[in-house]
Length: 119
Image 1 (cartoon, one colour):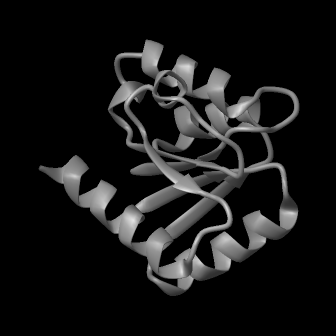
Image 2 (cartoon, rainbow, N blue to C red):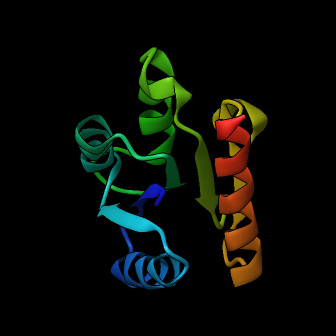
């Protein structure tokens, strides 16, 4: 079973994604901001991170930057989620999923990124 970490400051999104992904057989952990997400990444080593860009405390861009600086954590695939525009520089090689997204797009992206990480 793959472990996913969902980092988003909107409780409704965290709950919805947790429910959807759990039904699909994923083990899901959540965090409400980038600082909490970074802590959970270190302690739980998820197989994939779904990361919102705009959050309080520590935004997604800063969390992503810190992940990419760590030789161990930079190996974890990240799917960036945002309703706003995100540049390639901000993505730092991560996959992008525009909010609002279709359920099929979410599941396809998660599956593809996990498969790519295994190769």
